[in-house]
Length: 328
Image 1 (cartoon, rainbow, N blue to C red):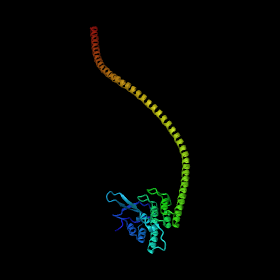
Image 2: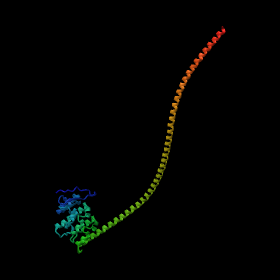
Image 3: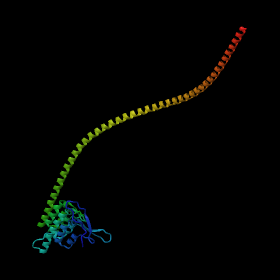
Image 4: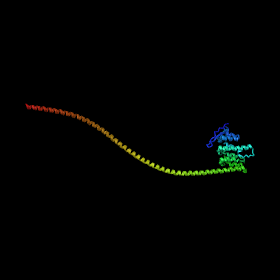
C-alpha cells in the first residue's frame, strides 16, 4: 500500500505533526517497523523523513476513542531488542536485529529529534517505553541516544506518575547488574546535564530579565522626560487654544456689535430713504405748482402787456385828440 505522507521537508523548517489511521492509511515506515524489517525501516526513514513525525493512531471501531497513539520511535523503543543488551553469544539473528534497531533509532532521532520529548496517549516518552522492556538488562547505548536528544526526560512523569528512573528501579530491583548500574549512571548524568541546562537557562533568563529591566529603566527615564516635554507642550498648546478662544470670543462680540450697528444704520437708511421719497414727492408737487404759477404768471404778464398796449394806444389816441383840439 502506498504511503500517504508528504515529501520530506527541510530539517531546518518547522514540522506540523501529522496523524494516520493504523487500519486505513498507515505510513510505509510503520509497515516496515510492524513487519520488523529494521533495515528497510531505516532506509524508508532516510528517504522519507517526514514519516518519522507522523503519528500512528488506533481507534475504537464503535466510539472512535483512541486505543493507542505512537510515533515510529515509540514503536521501535517498545521492542525487546532495543530495550535490552544483546551479547555476541546470543543468537546471531537477534544480535543483528539489535544492531539494526540501534541504527534505526539513530536515524529516527536525526530526522525528528522532537520524538524523544513527545509523550504517547499514556503520557509515556520513548524512554519510558524502552525501560519498561529492559528486564534488568537495559541497553545503555539506546538510553544515551534518547537522553542526548532530550535530557529532561529523566524528570518527565507518565500518566501513572512514574519517571524513567522509577521504571528502571522496577526493572532492576536488585540493582546489582552492571547494565542496570550503567543505566542508572546514564540517567544520573542526564539529570546533571538537565540541571546544568536549567541553571544555564535560569542564569541567562536572569541576565535577560536584568538587561530588560535596565533597558526598561532607561526607557522609563527617557519616557518620563518625553512625558514632561509633552505635558509642557500640551500646557502651551492649551494656553494658545485658550488665548485663541478668547480672541475668537472677542471677535464674535465685535461682530455682534457691528451687526447691531449695521442694523441700526440700516434702519436709519430705510428711514432716510422714506423721508427722501416723501421729499421727492413734495418737490415734484412744488415743481408742478411752480409750473402752474409760472403759466399763470406768463398769462398775467400777457394780460398786463395787453392792458399796457391798450393803455398806450389810448394815451396815444388821447394825445392825438388833444393835439387835434389844440390845432383847431
